Length: 62
Image 1 (cartoon, one colour):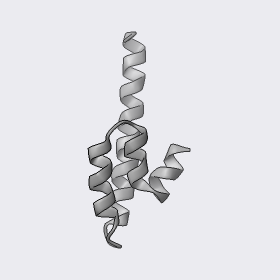
Image 2 (spheres, one colour):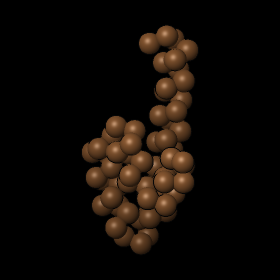
Image 3 (cartoon, helix red, strand yellow):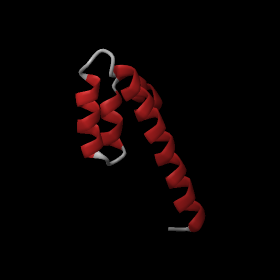
């Protein structure tokens, strides 16, 4: 579900993963038509990093 949000509404993903300042910056980037594609790519990348970090913490038992 978050992946779909990352593509359609990129700035919202940053708020769901606990990165509000990046979400605000992403919203500013997203307001331009050319900036929508980089914002979506950035959101998908950040979401993948979040999932990886979560898996590592679970493996370490933290």
